[in-house]
Figure 1 (cartoon, rainbow, N blue to C red):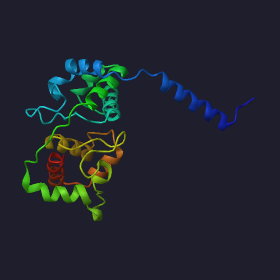
Figure 2 (tube, helix red, strand yellow):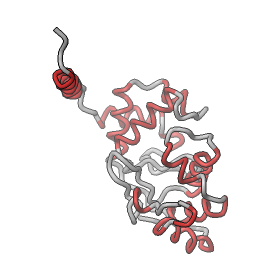
Figure 3 (tube, helix red, strand yellow):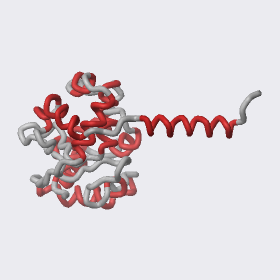
Figure 4 (cartoon, rainbow, N blue to C red):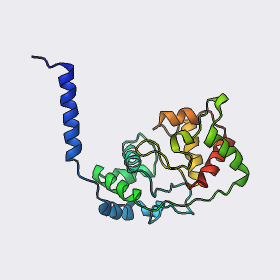
Length: 205
């Protein structure tokens, strides 16, 4: 006898719940060890970034779900990056969850906005968007202070402006393809507007 769609859906939900319950709990201690051996050289020993490498993001206090998702997408190639792909390819799913758990506990970096001339434009776009060009306010998803929304939108506050500029440019130009929403937003931004937003984000805390 064929089962009804409702019964099949219930069975699938029960299986998914059981699978989630069976998954090992992330271990930040193991994550710290993996991070030290694999990630610290580019992202800093405390995940707060390295000033001499501003194109590599600050990861401290980032949401664990976001970190794990990005690592998985680097590994699979959904997010194309010739540096991160071999690094992520060495990690198991447990490793990724452990690293993400440890990173999320680290003290966030306090950024400083250096490009003062761009701050007014950056604040305007970040807080209010440009409605006549279909550019929404960044604050709507990433929060007014750049703290983000857990499991949905990443923390941006204090991020290196060089990194933010590179990511927004990648979304706009199609070289970063793992977020359709961001690609649509960045499609309408000029180089000058991208740099202004990045400058403003770098000073948020």
